[in-house]
Image 1 (cartoon, rainbow, N blue to C red):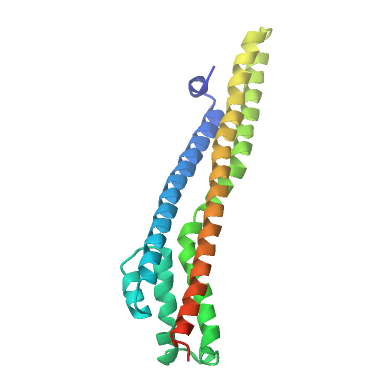
Image 2 (image 1 turned 90 degrees about the horizontal axis):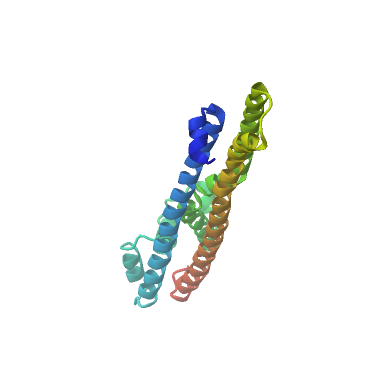
Length: 221
């Protein structure tokens, strides 16, 4: 009794169910690995940028340093520090011109944070979907497997407990496999949601510090 026996049994629906669960598991673990690498790279880049940023002589040199790094925080810095030029160069549409620079900067910060977080929040709904659907897909495979097993047993007439337990046990593997796929997916989803919130918080705190720095250097007019 085992997964190999299920594939050899010729039960198309049960076999397809296990294959779907296997594909979902591969997708889940692939997303997890890529997300771990992406968040790790972001945190490393942000720390490196913060050290460079606060050692800069002025905001202009800080922007030049930020352009050399690939991380959400330096990208946010470039976007926010370019807001002054964008505002005072008269490149705004009519409605934007009616907003003072302070409000314009606040909007720029909010939009920039949302933009920077999009790559880190992508595919999380896939993990959530896998975590919620996998147990039910496994249960569906189990129900179909037990149904076919009982049909075969009834056609064979009187059978022993051992002959009944084998097919039903194989069908129950689908439910176990569904849980095996769902649990890591839910765990990964919760981990990355937490990491995303922490990264968003870090970006927000840095944006506040940057805003204060702009005001202290007389950038706001």
